[in-house]
Amino acid sequence: MFVLDHLRAAMELFYPNLCAGCQNHLSPTETAICSLCLLQLPYTKFPLNTNPLSNRFIPLAGIDGAYSLCYYNKASKLQHMLHALKYKNQPEVGNLLGKVLGKRLVDLALPVVDVVVPLPLHKKRLQQRGYNQAQRIAEGVSPVLNGTMELKGLSRVQHNSTQTHKSRRERIQSMEGAFKADSNVFKEKSILLVDDVITTGATMLSCAEALLDSGCRTIYVASLAYADDF
Ligand SMILES: [Zn+2]
Image (cartoon, rainbow, N blue to C red; front, side, top):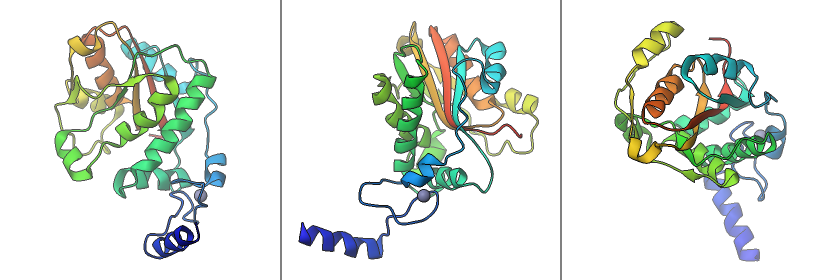
């Protein structure tokens, strides 16, 4: 134990184990995010079906509902966490927040899902990043929901560089046909579709449409964060 403690201390010097939210040192029992940051996240406390995000999705694509764990605010600790997940090679942030999201969905009595599906990245982006952040979130969510994570059968066929300066309508149009879903995999399945941040919802919507075309039974959409000020 003594040797291990020294080893840990030495490792800390070179690879400090810092919270992805506040940059303070993590205790040995904490991973990726400290307990205080987890406690103070801007949780939406949305109900499962009637919330502003659901209202945005349900009339548009026959989606059962949508839920987001937190509100997304710029320059917040949550933004630091999501930035670390996406750009600083810290996939464990996604695993941990995915677990929190899964527990919340269980508390809210989300109906049983057959498969948890991460929003796919385009191959090119996947090569740049080395991993799909949505998959890391789904890895945290699926064991909590007793669902199987499904990585095959859904792919992104279109690579979008930036959507920032487009209107919501333009974003939805530009995402049309961006995904392909295999009906052999998704037919009659109930799906939980997972991503990190939902802004306009254009990407999720396009993905959900591909899944609906493949003959799936239901889709519920969930994300870690929701930006309502686009
Ligand atoms: Zn922290």
